[in-house]
Amino acid sequence: MHKRLRVFFRTESAGGLIMIAAAIGALVAANSGAATWYQATTQPLTSFTNHVLMALFFFLIGMELKKEMVAGVLADKKNILLPLVAAIGGMVAPALVFLLINHDMPAHWNGWAIPSATDIAFAVCVLALVAKSAPPALKIFLLAIAIFDDLGAILIIALFYGGDLAEKLPIVGAVMLGLAIPKPYLDRVIHLLHPWVAFCILPIFAFVNAGVSLSGLTLSGLLAPLPLSVMMGLFLGKQIGIFGASWMVIRCGFAQLPAGTSWRQIYGVSVIAGIGFTMSLFIGLLAFSDVHLQEQAKIGVIAGSLLASLWGGIILRNTPHSSASRR
Image 1: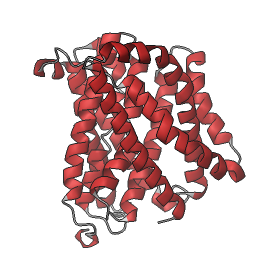
Image 2: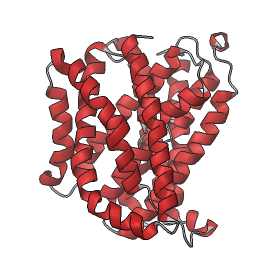
Image 3: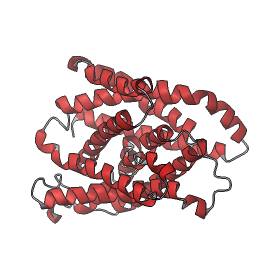
């Protein structure tokens, strides 16, 4: 694999581990004797984290989108169709699952996009941990899906969330600024900013936003329409949308399985793409102003991402590293 991609995956997987630790730390703190300290510490940081620090995250996304389109995995047009269609399927199906479960709950409808996002750092981390010998093409397939997914999430946020232009500018403006960075400077700026985002900004975001109180949470509470729809959108909707769209495109002869991969590996990637942590939490905060609904959405995001991590890990761990002959 290209040296830059190897560095990217190492950074993303390491950053994903730190994010996992931060999220676990937040959950433990919010559900222990440290709950008061956690609330007092994170509440003053919430606005700064979600609007200022995350603007740097979206700035990086803009640069990485441009880099991949200019000289990366999206520069070769023949590599675009399969992950593009898969990503579209992976955004549409979760939204449909969400709306189906909430068909009689109009107050929840604004959260339709919450399960449509993939967290690239978490997903790459799971892939790196459970499928160390996975073929490079499988990792590139996941990366390409996540790139299109990020672009789709940005468009969704710009078009459907944020009450006015001033609220959208920190996000959309950051992406546009990233896209505007001249090509000769892209590598240098990405190299400088990427570690800060992966190892600092995203873990801070996870710690500030993942601390949901689980006291009093029952099975019936978890299966309430909002958390259930987010959970099932991420876990079922993502795998149905990505795998189904990939199968359709390949069976119709418009694309081929990525080199050295099997259908089971494609399914495994479709499952772990249901880890929607960062962007799903962010969209949940934009979708609802009611704190109670935000908390329910967070529970759904955490539960769905956990299910996707576990089941996707099982599928990929028990998959031979190369099964190209199964096409």
